[in-house]
Length: 151
Image (cartoon, rainbow, N blue to C red; front, side, top):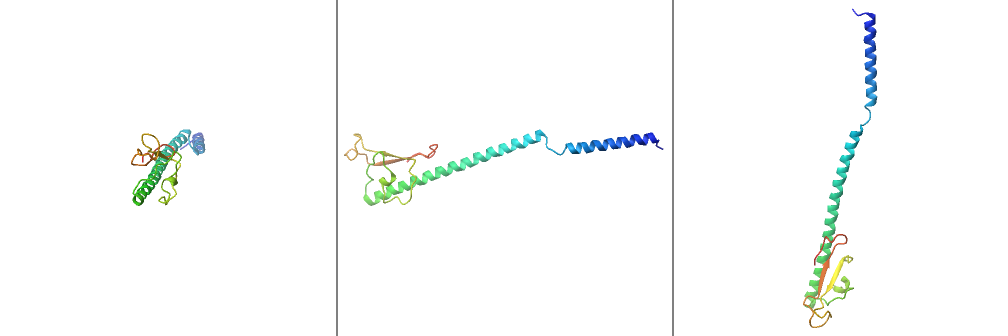
């Protein structure tokens, strides 16, 4: 049926094909450069999205803390007015929240970013008859970017 030379040729083809498959198997064990680059790009996109999401949460937390501190001082001024039937006295340029209404500030307020504005009236001297009705304005600014402003 088959001659001896024909069988030898078939055997050589089988062996060489098998060797090729073994060699290809050894070469397919790693990732290609393109596959690695795709994975790196995907990881970069995920990292970017995560950073911006965390930053938004941090900014919102700072704004909320700023608003709470402002409400604390607003409540202290209202309590002072309720007890004394007048606004607190006008403060100087180096005033601190403790100088404003010390008996009514029940919590420790972060004062690093508070600005106190005196309303001494047209002549610029506090305690005269031309002082404005509201003695103290509070302006609040956040530490980094001014996200929480106003009084």
